[in-house]
Image 1 (tube, rainbow, N blue to C red):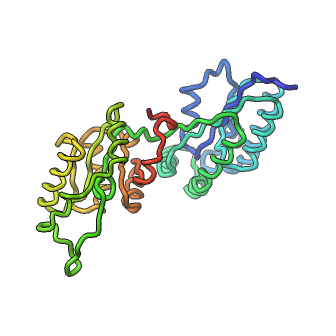
Image 2 (image 1 turned 30 degrees about the horizontal axis):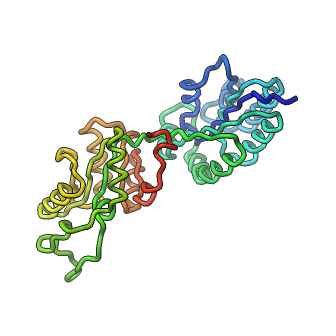
Length: 309
């Protein structure tokens, strides 16, 4: 039997990404039936939150059976599943398609570091290794699934409302510098004063600022001469108020500085994004629960598509 008006929402995301919370905030339970392997597991008489994996196979089989039964009745369905099990999720989507379902994939995109922290803080335990293993496959599975559903939506954990911008190599074009005896002369060389502005990055940042994003500078400056030069450069090329300009003596301390600034400025960590060109800095910032984006990713990142415009 074909039910052309029936709808199914398939949730995808890591364990503890926030899929169940999204359902509570966005789904009318009078209209949709919710299918969750986790709920099935927790309702089993033998359920133990410290050994939940023992009921994993049982719960996914029961969830799939529920999907078959509800789709046979043409009910609107939300399936709360990680979606990173290739064969399981694909099989359910293909089954729904044979019954004429309109299928939407909703990707709850939460960093694995956040999911691991949540796992430590709650009763039902998920091993770190399981979260990391799924995180490795998450992106490829998302691109596989969007090819077989009718529509998709990404729900980002990060809002990127507050963007901290590095200067050298991001909004100021770097050039080869003279190194004498293994050192750069930051006092006499006027290293930062004459760098060319990177116009495409600056234009995109200013566009985001006009529609409500808040911009800051967080740049490495080894001494007061460099800070003065960078402030002169900003005045000329990237006008931003002085109380939103921050400097740290070395780039390797940016993650620590940003963590301190989120407290000082009373910002939520999931609202913060650092724009930089060094991967080691980006990884350290992500490890502290804040977002970080390489300049090459920023230039192609579609804020509108991710629901941030």
